[in-house]
Picture (cartoon, chains in turn brown, purple):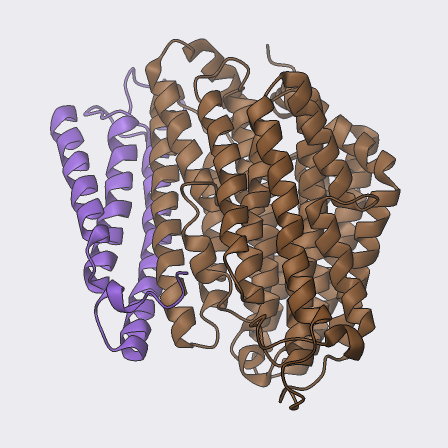
Length: 498
Length: 114
């Protein structure tokens, strides 16, 4: 199978799995088996895809053999392929964790088909080369996430879901409006063709309006300041496996869309929106981490950290130097793995301590030293301590900031790193170090091995990225080079047109 | 015609935003409906209004000078279908939320905010 046809697998596998799971609605066992096979298949396909693109360059699939820019294309450059691989890794971990942790009710009411639909939406967004198709995949992902969010029907879930649904629909409407205006301006929807045509429209103020709409629409999805309010209101309400899946993937689709639009269609070099992005990056980092510092509930601390980490990625995009983009891609790779893992660790803590409130927890270091280790690896990596993955991501980014002379952003990034460490030590001191407030039985079953396995797997990956930082750096380097020189992408999609 | 539609889109957007900012969750959903329709109409207007021939050209004949652009309508059709599906979800969601919270008031739904 050539790399070009391989692109379709990350879409087909989850969609097929969702359909099969729906078909075997009555048999939870069959759904579990299908899910396990599907995520492993997805992982294999994603590895093959990254490998193929590393070897042969950008792969393009013209669906129905309609030539670009008339038909819809699927494009996998290194960024898209890496994101698909990360989605597959997260999906595998979450699927294992779900098998071990879910009660009967969500499994019987469509958890597995929804999970696969969500993954299909995420992979579709990473692989499409058509801006309207991107909107459609966004909606696939959103509808699946809506249903996953309220699976269980508790009051907090309903309240969180209303905010989540409203703000995400507003974002979709803005995205759609931007696509409409862009189509009116250029008469095309193919992203590579848009990049070519927009270069002729540089003096048109409409281009800036459209770019601004994209920035707000993707900014809401990515959760940047001041558009993130749906995120801390909803992420702590669903099942922990669902929270973890959202934390790893959903906001990163927004970040991916920002990277794609602002490198390909509206290159940021001289673009008016760049100072806005820089300011957003700094404010996102700072507000996110301060929000986390004020919280004393495990599941409410972590969403605020997602926001502050998104700030680092936006900073990488806003600096728009080769080194900054390398750092940004390294950071995304590190972040997705670490963040999903921290949510899973929160779930393990709940199973051992019976609560998510830091005040009610304690003494877990004595009771479960292994849990302390698997918490400490992602927590210290998130704060950026060497030799873990987060250190290298932050190091490259801050180095890029210093080179670009953005002293304010560099200072903010360093302070935020310190505050992240504060926040993590707060969890450490409350959950692990302090004596248990009561000796009572937590009243929940202890975690099974299927819950611990994915956490251990992600921990090993975190350490591996830290120790083997050089290969990951090379991968990020080549990805950043592709982003900075969109001509490769454009030529791959449009063929030998001028 | 363009001006008229532009005004129409503007009115729809402002009505949608006004309704979304209300405290009532029923008005919120109506606002979301208007918002997606405003975007659809915006695509329709922005992609150019044509009064000439429909884009159906018999085989072998040359293309007329001006034909309506079918792609914009295909986009709107897709967006309408997606919008309808999402709306169906939103209506069920507010019904369930109303049952759980027992109030049609966003101010009663601040439990998850801080």
